[in-house]
Amino acid sequence: MKRLLVTGGAGFIGANFCHYWSATYPADRVVVLDALTYAGNLASIGELVQQQRLRFVHGDICERDRVAGLMREESIDTVVNFAAESHVDRSIEDPQSFLRTNVMGTHALLEAARSAWGPAADRGMRRFHHVSTDEVYGSLSPADPAFTESTPYAPNSPYSASKAAADHIVRAYAHTYGVPCTISNCSNNYGPYQFPEKLLPLCIVNLLEGRPLPIYGDGLQIRDWLHVGDHCRAIDLILRASPVGETWNVGGGSTEPNIRIVEAVCDLVDAAFRRRPDLRQRFPGSAPAQNRSSRSLMQHVRDRPGHDRRYAVDGSKIARLGFVAQTSPAAGFAATVHWYLENERWWRDIVSGAYRDWYARQYAAS
Image (tube, rainbow, N blue to C red; front, side, top):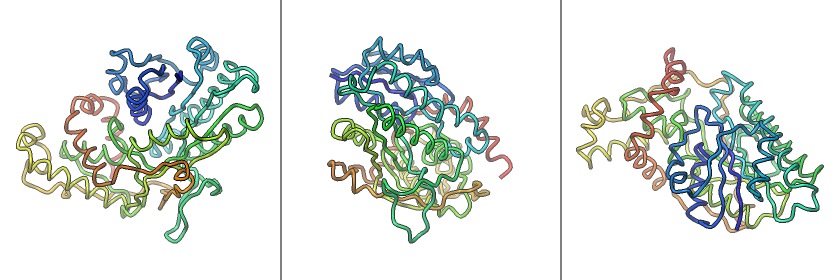
């Protein structure tokens, strides 16, 4: 039986991990620590809380002493750190909050683990797993090979720089203090419970609301798309099978230009409207409800400053542990569109709040 502290467990990937872990290992104890900033949503794990399948604690990872006390109280043996500010556009607007959470917050968690777990010799089967991003490696040209775990770091945004700094701090604590750490650098995640500022949920929500679909520049930026369910399985495998001190790249094995992803989502929404007449009544402002193609809402906007052109992840190392992404892009994107159609209340509550203000600032001048 494991006793996990999942930081950022009310965010997108963290919430999916909590659902995965609770279903896969129902006997384990799961404690979620989340500050519930704009992208944290207690509704994403509300069912698990109500069913007492996990304990939720409202708190900040920067509160080192409080986190250490919580770890002692719950006899935590495994920390999975999802807590992070993660949106590049917001990091350009407000880099300081990214440095606070992603750098100082990770440092505080490591200090809390050192305090709660005691000397290195006493740490036994404990594990501190830090979830990072492929963006720490920078940008690839068309001919460059995919990122490997030995690719030099070259972050290009305040977000990726803050995650790179956190990775280095984790490695330093493993080497200097013997904190039993592992790191994973994942590619672009998508799936249920994703805050609608990222590409897929932004497109789906805008399509259903009849708003423009913003395409940065020419839209030919290439990303590796990883379904969040596959990501959760990869972290599970790392926790069970990885030696301490290892770093693992986790990708979906599917690299597509952003504009092709947007087109695919448009076509999936149009197909859903053809199958289900009720959607016209639920979403009267949408293009298909007005007998137009969803692609008609695509709109090119000014490119993001310093926008990385291409990411691609070499997953051969984690494949040797037995991991392979199981969700094809076609199935994963279709399932994601279906989830947002069936969970309108979840994203309506978000769209009516902070996201609407951010959306207005981001695209009003475009």
